[in-house]
Length: 288
Image (cartoon, rainbow, N blue to C red; front, side):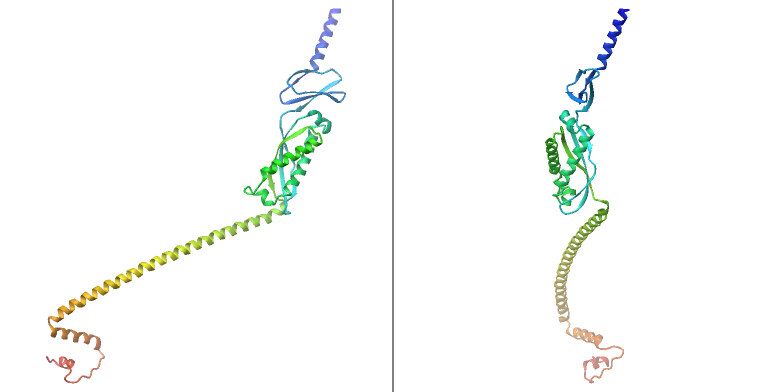
């Protein structure tokens, strides 16, 4: 009987020990509370033991976490409204401070979101709208770093025991009521740019046409000048041949010139009055 009781007591003690042993894993904190107060925080991996009945254990993440910050509306330096959607990467650095001041992970995230919104609104309020949305003009990278730095200063000042590794903008949008006006402005800008390209094209076309016309005129002028020279040379050669030919028979030349003059002066309606001793009359009358 005594032996049975002894073994029963051993079993109860073993179960009690087993139920109060806990394991600390990589990437987590184990928070040990006694009557609701934090008495110990275990961060090194291994088997740990808590006092039965009076102590409890909860777990907090030790690894980096991502938090999707709620979308918020801000005003830019040039008085334009826009919607900003951020996310943050953060971790718990001091679980005891986090529990003491924020109590839970959810409340720590809520406080971090509040600080992020405050800093983002302040920092982007110093930039113009185009500087925020235009990648070529944007200083967004430096703004993200600045926001991260300022948020950590605020969290450290209030002893929240958490650290923000990074804050990034994942999306920037216009409020729905402003989208249409911006779209119209973008369309207008692109139409203006297209018109500029068309004007440049027309100017280049006119330049090419003018240059081509100039070259054509030069070619035609040169061809006409060459033709005049060739024609003059041909007429000179023809005159020389005529002179050589006609000088061999003066009577034939006179006859030829007379017949040529007939072609120019006589037609079907021509009336000619000639003296009887005229060479024309002599030829028409069959004289020699």
